[in-house]
Image (cartoon, rainbow, N blue to C red; front, side, top):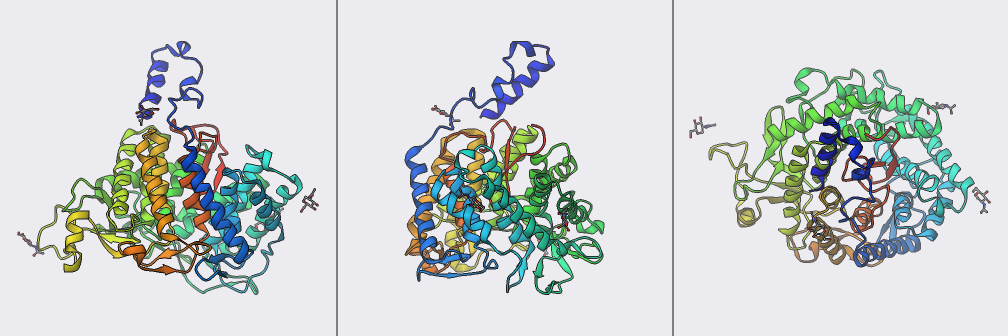
Length: 525
Ligand SMILES: *[C@@H]1O[C@H](CO)[C@@H](O)[C@H](O)[C@H]1NC(C)=O
Ligand SMILES: *[C@@H]1O[C@H](CO)[C@@H](O)[C@H](O)[C@H]1NC(C)=O
Ligand SMILES: *[C@@H]1O[C@H](CO)[C@@H](O)[C@H](O)[C@H]1NC(C)=O
Ligand SMILES: *[C@@H]1O[C@H](CO)[C@@H](O)[C@H](O)[C@H]1NC(C)=O
């Protein structure tokens, strides 16, 4: 593994032989053992799929939010601001497709972020629209300036991001500063909910702090940090069943947690992801976020790691309700392997990399065990050390028993919603180790998605990953197909570049949870 090489110069420095080492060379891209060269055939195939889906969207759906690929229709589930176009921006940039970049750049300036007929999700709007615009701005002002056809227009992208954030900012106007998630624009209001969840509260800070850093207006970052502060010091104490692992719902009027249940699953997931990524973004300002990630990571290894009874060599992370464990996980949770690997690289802790690779291996098995080669939305297993009379950990239903015997998990929701997390974690595993196996896994996953989901003018969701052809389509193409699935599938086969995750932990870029890369703000770690 490449990881061991970062240990050598540290030892050399301590023993006073630093002079003998050419400055920084062991850390630089030029001198790394090169397992990150272009696989042109695969990269081109992923790019071709991106262009195919873009053409379908452009022809039948643009500038609406998303394409219905089977019927060549469209819908506006994200306020009608062109979610697929904004989400495709940073992927068109890293794939370096000038005409698509120009189309999206011009389009962004025309979006009317002041108006929408529908409820606005603070979280979804932040990760897709703010994230997409800030990433495009970073690339066009930085390493992809060669694709910046109109610098005046690029400056206006940042203005659009500020305009959108100004329209969203009233969400934080609550007694505690914890934001409401579901907003109404005209007249300003909310859906009336008195609680918000840790994923939707805790997955704003990277985007809003970056907007502050780029614009010079400190308010954005301060608003998001204030909401986050309640998650960094959760109250009451019972809402933190193990150090760093916390409940899900928080009262926006009191700041008190309402429960002690959670995990690395949907509703909680990217809260944990951002604790670490804030430290990658700026280690000087966000050391205390990293400390919370370390607590959560260590508690997860100690308490949530679980091996299924029929395949004890597999590792999954359980959910929890207090200290009671629930042996269930999700496609969404499969970002966890990537998060542990990134943590290991950045903190130079081999144990996190090893544990992350074990999680990656488990999620890979959820893919290769099904008929389509794609993993399910939700799955369960029986923990290996379970007493037969343990009613909290029941055996699978009879019609799932044979599948469970072989696979080590059984499917409780077989949908595939064009989610990226498994390929995302393959990407981190590959960047960390250089092991070509992870490239092959990502390629096989991409081919399975292409074979099963590509239909009509784009890619559709599947009803059941364990039926022939996915058991039929759901006629909907999520915008994150562009932002995430095709980006990670491409980048793992693309050559080294500054925006790629670094095996030596010295990242110049960090990906938001929608896979929009941001330029790191702080000094190298
Ligand atoms: C650049 O973009 C600005 C802002 O949209 C526009 O006014 C201007 O005409 C564009 N310039 C060119 C050369 O297209
Ligand atoms: C800074 O952002 C806040 C929050 O959206 C906004 O109210 C304020 O007007 C902005 N300040 C400037 C100078 O743009
Ligand atoms: C389960 O069985 C064990 C003995 O095998 C016993 O000690 C334990 O109390 C039982 N638990 C329940 C919930 O019945
Ligand atoms: C890196 O690539 C070389 C061939 O280019 C191969 O021999 C080596 O096994 C690879 N290393 C890993 C960790 O996969």
